[in-house]
Image (cartoon, rainbow, N blue to C red; front, side):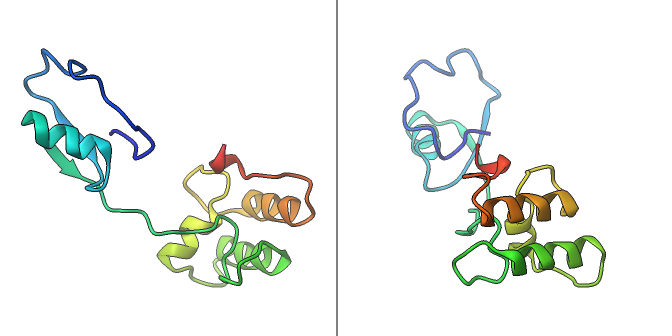
Length: 118
């Protein structure tokens, strides 16, 4: 997979790779490179525009968001797909109490960014 953050690819970067398939988004430099060089592409779904930690969509990260995460972790509420993405602030693939702790730390300004953003 070539992330969307890649801004350039050397012309000979994939020389000698006849079976190469580039996994990327359609709006990426990697897609344009693959198209220009006849390389097979597997398109990835575009990630929705999200704000990590903001589960209620109010534009800020706060205690209510941490409470939502705890409810999801305890199976007391079912998150939407977007809420799952927003809630997994440590990037470990699951929503748990540790994510709620990070949200509270950010709300209290003990941390500036979530681990998933580093």
